[in-house]
Image (cartoon, rainbow, N blue to C red):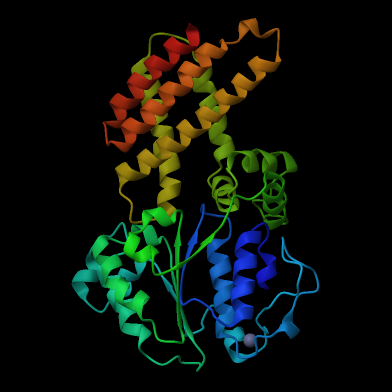
Length: 368
Ligand SMILES: [Zn+2]
């Protein structure tokens, strides 16, 4: 797969193409931008170029890419290094991620639960490896996923490597925002920013990726997910895999219920839905706790509710015969109470209490 395959990231493409041509490639990068827009794929393709034995203009793609009208420098795709890269086993490509602690030689580190990138992972899998000669002879590339989850200790441990990496070593830190990293880390890296993807592109990609698959989706459903994914193809894919469109019906039922009694059973039902959704998140990330899974499920439901209400607000604004609907004011109040509840969940308030008081405020707002 060529670098030009990653679409709608013109700024990143231009910066990297210029650096590749200038033969003054920085050794440390921060790839900053929302998740699911191609940051890691881009890092992987760049690594392939840096590790390739025959990178040249001859590999230039015929078509031009977003905002770059010259030919595109790319990996050859046929050398030993490229072939190993294609099957995910190039020994000079080092993805660094939180779960690596499970492969650490020290039993104590292996058994520790870890929600971020620990200092042990950085020391053992980055610092201790950078000095060794590249196995395939050309270079070594380290790609640190979710770099913002590095503890301060882990970032400080990485500093020395960022300061003086061996000439053949490149390090790419992937993060939603460069500001989430320490100033000392930032100042040693070249920043490359990634933006949100256009909604129609996400809908098309979603449909083509799942085509012919038991999980394939209609154009309408692809559009539904794309509109809720806030410019992230990765989020759209996850939402589809989690079956969020079915959850949307439950959410609408909660919004339409107006009865003032029965708050406790309604809260129990909503929490159960959140737990079911959370269980799907946990299948992806087995290290999160029951409570954390439930919280994430609840936040996903609140996000759907908020979007559903915003749609209502939009309809109320364009439909003059909207008198039977809750007023725009009522909807705005309801959206506010969702935001309050999200904050309470982030502050680790009791889920049962949060949901009960939320449903009371929601019903009060919408029946006003
Ligand atoms: Zn190659």
